[in-house]
Image (cartoon, rainbow over all chains, first blue to last red; front, side, top):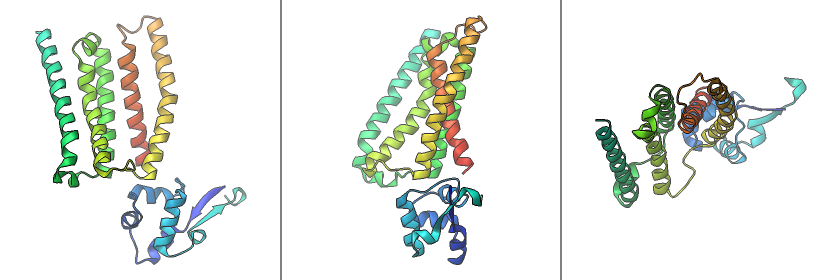
Length: 71
Length: 164
């Protein structure tokens, strides 16, 4: 199972928010946002909640589980 | 001549360490401390310094093995790397918070630590084989292991950071 996310879409919906700007808002570096979007890094619960709070959405609308047979 | 150079290196090392300790104690007590912040640039620079120190140390260990310990060259080579991490320690002291890097950087450093532990084993095995066949002159195990570790650790972090 992997973790998918809608971060890129949410950024674009939020006036084309840059990765750098989003990173600053949630207190991480740009590479962290890049890694999350590419699915190479699983954020901590704390960071996931901060992202959810920023976009004003439940965590489940930002992150989702990709089942193995969906790969 | 070599003795004079050794004395100069020892004095320089002592002087730099004393200044660094003094700054470590003094800077948090000043208003200047507000300017000290962790950044991606400092994080990357630390790893670049680590790679360069490791590489330099390995070259000197093989090319001038008799100088690396006698002339205190290994301390001189590792000093920039040590000062970079001392700088991190200074920022922690100023911020009164050990979380100066973000979770991805922390994750990369953990993976780099594991990779370094794994890769130093074959590195030492190679040297053991070369040494047992007398293919290496005057091998100094500790400087070799030390610089291999610094090189692999910093190099791994840079690689993981670049391939975010």
